[in-house]
Length: 83
Image (spheres, rainbow, N blue to C red):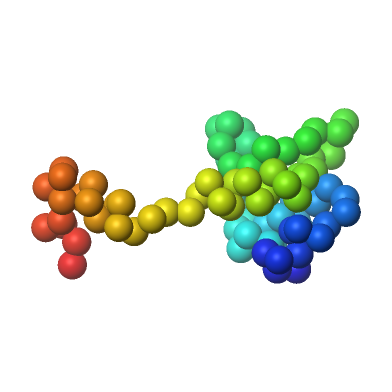
């Protein structure tokens, strides 16, 4: 499964599917849920599922603009810390 598959999924995805899709461990997804981080999820009884639209939103929101990060580093005076 790849990131393009998200758009075409017709059902909620399992933890394992999402971990493979995002390249993360199931343990990371569980830790994020425990801390209230990560993508939105559904709890159906004891089962945890992720909606494709929520994963797309999470991936989009996680994108970082390197130019903005560089500007923030310069403003904070931390550019010397980077090799």
